[in-house]
Length: 265
Image 1 (cartoon, helix red, strand yellow):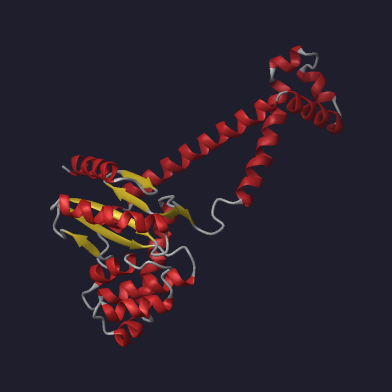
Image 2: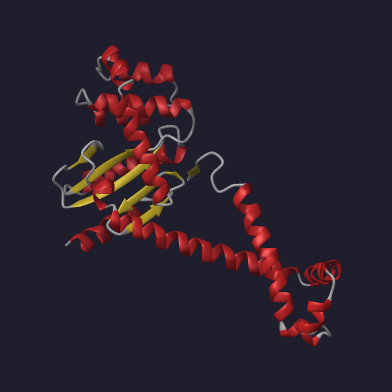
C-alpha cells in the first residue's frame, strides 16, 4: 500500500514518545518491582527531578524490553481506537461512501453488492489490483464498483484523476480508467493526454471540463472521506461494514465481497 506524503510521520511519533515517557515515569513510581528494589513511591516522590530521570534512565537501559512492550501496547491501542472511529464513520456516512451520485460506477450499476475502491493511477499496487478488479467483475455479474479518485502521489496523479472524472462527462470513464492502468510508465500529463486521444475522447473538451469546480470538489470530498475512514494510502477498499487497506489477491477480494453481500441481505 502506498501511503500519502508525510502521513503518520514524526510529529505524531514525537508526541507518542513524549506521552510514553510521561507514562513510564508514573509507572516507575507505582511499579512494585522497582519499589521492591529499594525505591518506595514515597521515596520516589521525594527525589529531585534529576534523580528520578536518572533512575528511569538506568532502569530502561537495564530492561529495554519494557520500552518496546510499552510502545507496542500503545500502538495496538491506537490502531484499535482508530479502527473503531473508522467503523463509526462507515456507519454514519453510508450514502457518501456507497451512493455518491457523482462517483463513477463500474461493473453492474444495479448489482446487489458494492465494492468501493480508493486509488491513485501512479500507485504500483493499484496497478496490480486493476486486472484483479476486472476479474472480480467478470466472475460476479452482480458486483457494483464505486471508484473514488484519491490522488496522493503528486501533481501527475491529480492531473490523471481530474482527466478521468472529466472523461466521465463524455461517458467514457471506465474505458479511460482501464487505459490509464494499461500504461507501462508513470502516468504524467503527456501520457494522460495521449491515452485520452487514443481512447477516443474529445481532448479539448476534457481539458476544459477538468477546470470545472465540481471536478476538484469531487477529489476534495474523496480525500476528506478517506481521511475520516482512516484510509491513509492506496489502494483502500470498503465493502459492507469492512474497511480493507492495501492490495490483496482475488480470493481475498471475493471473500470481502461475499461478506459484504451477506451484510446487505
